[in-house]
Image (cartoon, rainbow, N blue to C red):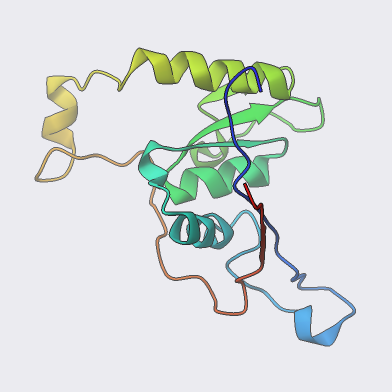
Length: 151
């Protein structure tokens, strides 16, 4: 409430490659670290992932957020090793959820990062540069589960 954040939906992946319920026992692109669930949520809620933050407490969350094109915050519960792969490195690390929200609010208030001239030369033809390979392929149609709030 202090950060003026609204919960617009709850999304989940019912699949597990080693699950015991046969119809859910498969590999999908909505199970983190794949970004399908985030892409699905963005489509349903009309969210621009390039201007969004994803907060998680495990590195699979961070990887999913990075793959979707979000900036990410890891809530450090002390259970994750330092990420070696850049796709698993968060934009910021927080002590708890309240701290994560404060980080997002503070960094969002600063506005976009300054683009340096050398970044334009090293990026794409139009000057845009992605930090990670972004996977924006359409989610598996079986991965469309959500519970939306009435607010």
